[in-house]
Length: 356
Image (cartoon, rainbow, N blue to C red; front, side, top):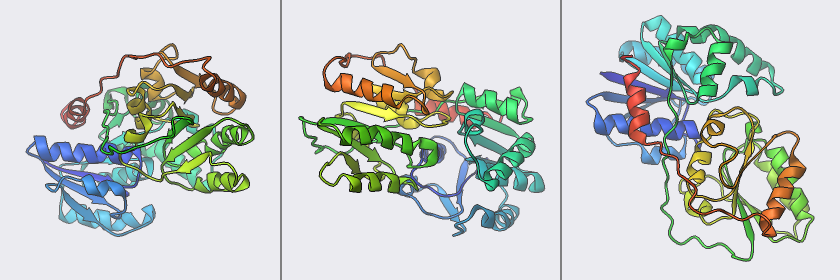
């Protein structure tokens, strides 16, 4: 079978990481011919694409510019099925698949219900309108959590039988041996794109409290995005305190996180949250958002050292929990049970959906 996998680029997000894993799996463990189709070849995950995978790029930087060249390519070089991920790419793949008679399997990575609670631009509203009316034409859809599946059924016309739930696998890159953190400092790690979705302004409120305190604490950010300036400006306001460290994208962020005292992830909406699952298995305490998400399905509030909060309103409660860990009122409990989410299971499910 000839399989195309379509994404905008290979920038530093969870969806890109998972789909690179999928094409690598197909190249290594199946007889499929695999083509990775990109709007452009930007992104750090290019370095881990299997050499057996053919990469096609159109060097376009806007999603709207990819429709015509993708149509021409798939008409000239037809595939049996196209997998796509992230909403704009999904809509384009569905449209072109309908025109050319190609099966399209979309992967939906976010919850629509929580996303719809946020303030949206006109283009976002248009995207949601198209999602509601075009998703029905997908051949099948992969939902990365039960909450995502529920949303798809509620907000689109996709039938239940066309949606397969497949949690993201845990794929840890732990390749840095010489990580050294000051043992006198309380270290908090955050791993995500620095975007509106990840609630960076609220995180900044938490940090500002500690900038005004005498606690020896540092917040480490692994990721890039439009909201980076929020953190940079915060640090500039307190030049005498070294509380924020921006590491940028780091493929082996786990090498740092596993040595830290706490992990924090309080997005406004989330499909699953790869980093949450990966860091959970490290055993460190976690502050998480109580939005409906995949990680809330797999990591229960009564699990050891797991703390859920409202991402809009619980800033003071989050601060109190951090202070309790710093002061020793709360302590990490060893040997927390681990999650078992193997790559082969997830990618077998992705591949099998063509025949289900």
